[in-house]
Length: 204
Image (cartoon, rainbow, N blue to C red; front, side, top):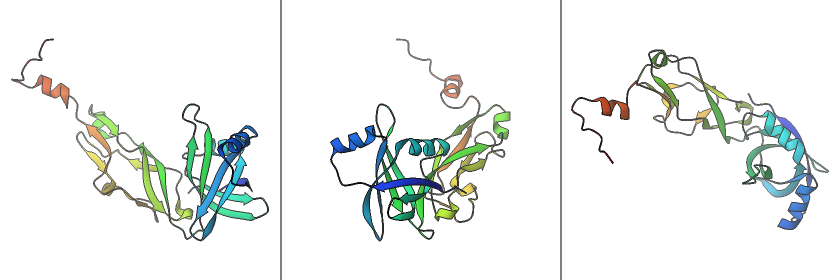
């Protein structure tokens, strides 16, 4: 399960873009915390600490204990991070105030494990979903999801309905959504070109 991270925060006044840019130059990341039954709070967190927290995590969906100066600690879920389009540096963070009984929706990295028998026979394994959207309670939030593809032969697919999720976790995708597929050798365009009676390719 995901580990709760601790993060220092301070209340900031509602300010314009100029002041927010100055705040970033001073090493702060402008943030906001909101949630059902909670008034929106404009916050700022240490940008360096926040980036280190992201670097250690497998995704940007992180549970944090926000230690808000003068207010106390509040459990929150990192709902969104807004990045600079050119540098990729975080510009703003949105935190959802929650408790341990509040269901959350997160995108969790999906990893395939094992060597498919279809790959051993010459097929090609293709992964269609690299981050799976799930809902769960905070204490059930996983770091990653692993799916065994050992049993997949050539032409076989792994669907949402084919996997068993850990207790308390539900995928938001439909049961027929394909996670991974083993393509047959020579399928697709190559197979069409090699088919008997196929028309020759037109010359330019």
